[in-house]
Image 1 (cartoon, rainbow, N blue to C red):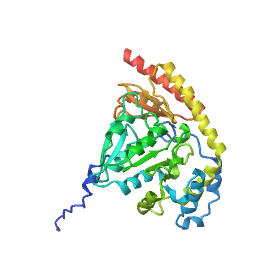
Image 2 (cartoon, rainbow, N blue to C red):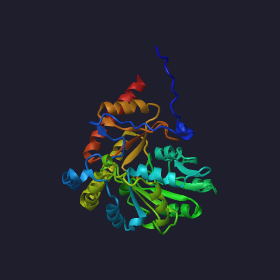
Image 3 (cartoon, one colour):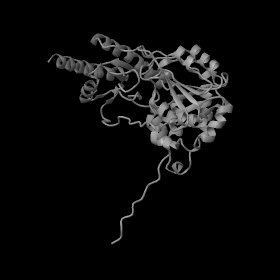
Image 4 (tube, one colour):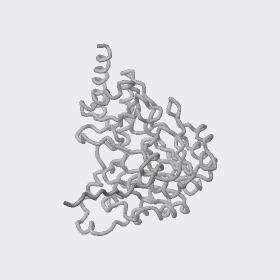
Length: 364
């Protein structure tokens, strides 16, 4: 009888072994999904038309992003060489970090913020330096300036930020870039449409400024995984060396131009969310729930020690919300995506019942 052979599998790099894991709370797809900040309704009808027009033969060819990048650049008022389409904004962040972060470099992160900044930076030999916001969760501008060192290589600012929906002003972002000319200042404008303010027009004018966008939020294309990175031509040239030439699929490329063209639908959806946010904030105030002012399509609320029970009660009512208690400085806090007014009336009713149950339980 042959002896069993013990095999030792190849070990990953030490950096990969030390990486922080990210586990998205997927599941229960039929519930009202107020946990991912997606478009909660639908993409533009013109996108559906584009999907129906795609031939089977076209799927046999590798995707070509360059022609669509020309369209996107014109839409943004930029040159094609300043824009790269990516597989979601996540790839834009990942590729940027792989391009510029080296051993001994530092990534400055105002926290709490988007988790994947830290995840992707941990795969490099750079060090992430967290700059904690105060209890108001406002952009920690002065603290961030004070944290800049000669080792600072990238400063990543989500604007608006998650989970609170707070913002940095245009002046603060320009000053940040001026005070760290040796670093890339990445402004992640994933929630731009709900905020209405941008620094995209400064791309190529502020030499170390780069801007990321996603089409997963207002445009409702999260399932197609589509984002972009914009920056000075000199810096984008290096980024393109790292970026996979075929990472954006043909379906996404076919759908993006009609999505950009349908400004009527986009404006309607954004207006619907902003109106729903105002109404839902009023419902939160009526419940006496602390909330943070938001310029995005979500709101952060204070639930306290019973945050886990609150999330479970909302889920039982077919409303999914995101527990952010593991974020720095967010213990007991829950983030709720804002959908349409009709959807948020259902969410407000579920919230009222959940809070009543929690209060009744605390008195028992």
